[in-house]
Length: 337
Image (tube, rainbow, N blue to C red; front, top):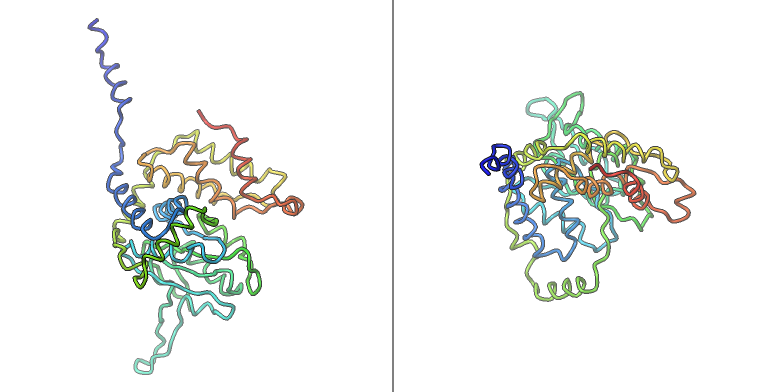
């Protein structure tokens, strides 16, 4: 009977009652507090809020797509209010020029030299309203800043302060006066989040809350909870989350399958594989785990891939969407055990 309490048995017991090797308690506390603040204004949309928080932790940009009035802009402003960081809002219009976003050099009469005046992009959290309203020249101005977090103007480079996150909104219905986003720009968004109409009970609650607000603003009582230093710290923490080799192969198989799928005209690039990896770490973190599971990868796959692939024209005419095809791919790829 003495042999039962061997060191091997003790190790097994410790493994059963394991503790996370990375201390995620402060991160979880902040995540839950931010959710609570947002839920005082936004009814439902829990999935969208989770995805926005994962984007922040994964250091990625977000494209919010939905019809007018489904709280795209207010959600971004709420999120900015909970974070103690600089916030800029840019309304995209057809006459917007790159210098209106990035900034421009102005001649200083006193010093007889040109001085660079920074544009609204020099901030931590950027809300771009109706991103598809601006022409290609203005869209191209975002390529470098979204990918490299820097701007090159007149031969000089300007690094942006961290954290740097772009949340852009677009309306999928109204196409008059809009410009389709190029694939190279879409590929720079970590997530494309599609926002649906609220359910009946949620709609009733929205109306009730608006009625009770009367003259009080929606954002007045929102508390600031997270500093830029803490965001940078949590982003570094999330990068340390463990991913087993078989899960890395699982991500690769899903992405490669998009390139070989007959329903897709264009598959996802290696940047999509990296995006799924980073996003799955974020989902694991907000669930309180320091390791990634296949469920985290599945949860990340659709918002990461749906805007990076192009449906074959004949399938698009049949009404098949990219998210439906990605769901089918996830179901066909074998889950690692």
